[in-house]
Image 1: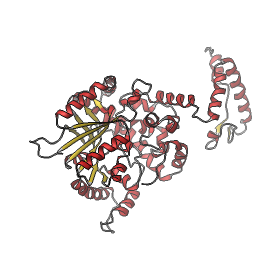
Image 2 (image 1 turned 120 degrees about the vertical axis):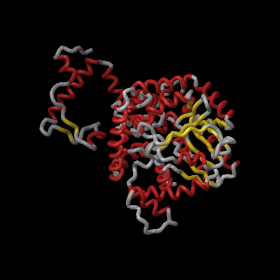
Image 3 (image 1 turned 180 degrees about the vertical axis):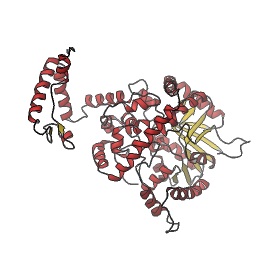
Image 4 (image 1 turned 90 degrees about the vertical axis):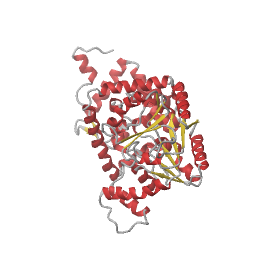
Length: 476
């Protein structure tokens, strides 16, 4: 697998992404398609806003009693013939899954799409143990062939075009006729389906994620549009669910409530094509299904978020709406964020899981326009939490010295309103005079981050505060 970008190098990653013409073209589909579809789906459901409130309240209630619902879930999974394993971190989770695969004598492992499996590096752990791991979601399969991480949590290969996929299929699928026609997307899909069909039939163990885990029944729920998740969990002799602890919901009714906002927020569908519920292994009367059913519940830093400013992030249902509407994601794509979770949700979750020292650049990659919060189906206050991370970064002196000193100077004036108005008036007047001839500046001291890429307009007229005061407004 090729080296992946890291969160510490976000600025360099973003710079490279901005210069990637093919990526910029691909990101145009995110800017248009996802936004329009979500807006149409939400407008078609009069109770959509009320459902968002309900989904938020269900998740808040669950997080407030998470220990009790985890115990109830484990009890009901066990009663149905399955087994629950708790993993404190990625290393424990991988070890548990590898041990289960070895106990089953597995050689081939198929996987449904799971961001948590990306988080723990599961494929590498399975392969290091001498087994083959094959992604069965089409987008995940494509990026596995390329040795890449997902660039979006619901559309992993959104950064690629058809020609790149064709080239990868011809490079890897060498047993197929060289002259075959792969001009149409349908032909690419048919070829992937044929290759993956053999993988499904050869699989000894299937691994899926979970959109929801239902405490009431011990059920895991996956939501897909391809049906690969169903084949992954029913054909092999063992099914392993890997999920993080916050995926618990109390009842099936609660899950159905949240499902009504999930697909609409993610892809603009009323419902995804497949919503699959699994409760334990095959029963005596079942015609098919796995003989063994395991659930690995991952903490990996999430319990430390409970009771903090970042607890609301645990409401996330992984719909991707925040990144679909984020101007920063639109500009640089998912790989620039350097870890598993991109966009606004990644800017909050990544520092929570790997540390602000490694992920501190991400909360700064935001215009604070608020679009992410306005479309979140569970109303997560993402901008507020990004501000909290910026504060943590500043307090620990992790931000550049120039930034800290600059903020210190600004704070000195901001605490003295009269001095602030005086300094702002002088600066505005001077810049307006110096820039009057051209109406803009190509270079300005201390403003290279702006003028390196665009001109700075020269100030025109008086400051806002002076105009406000002239119209009878009050200033401190």
